[in-house]
Length: 114
Length: 106
Image (cartoon, rainbow over all chains, first blue to last red):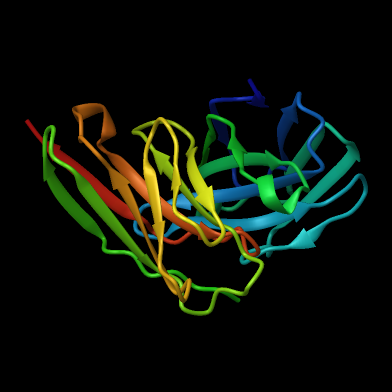
């Protein structure tokens, strides 16, 4: 089975800190994604990547950056954390095959910014 | 961008069929329609996907309208473990909405 692993289940940070959220997948997927999930707002796409060193903005990229130096790893960076970035963050990966592009999600990281 | 519309919530009695609708009127001809579900405290999981024809797997069936502007996820016999938020998602955008929260009544 595909496994998407997020480095932390719970994370507490202070306002202004630089925060790294790590995601690793073990199935050689080309595509990787970062979402945030908030009550009443569903899942919103922050950034995605179709290949190493490539990135595309999603719905809500402001305040975030990403890094994909290796195919299996996709990092989400909060340059200066703010309280409105308190949320559940979900990473996902998929093949690039249009007929089989189903997403596999990690368990999520609940980030609290104080 | 393709947008989806789903009811916010639905209820079903246990062991009865459930039909979860989704409208995706702006879908393009090459977009596969994916469905996911999210159980409490977990990340979403894949349920089923299709392009034009109806699809079946061990979890559910997917009925796609002939004009592809809507689809319906069918759970043939709802169980308590099917209580979750269900999302439909046309392939291209990978943007999820708020989905449908399914409550299964014992």
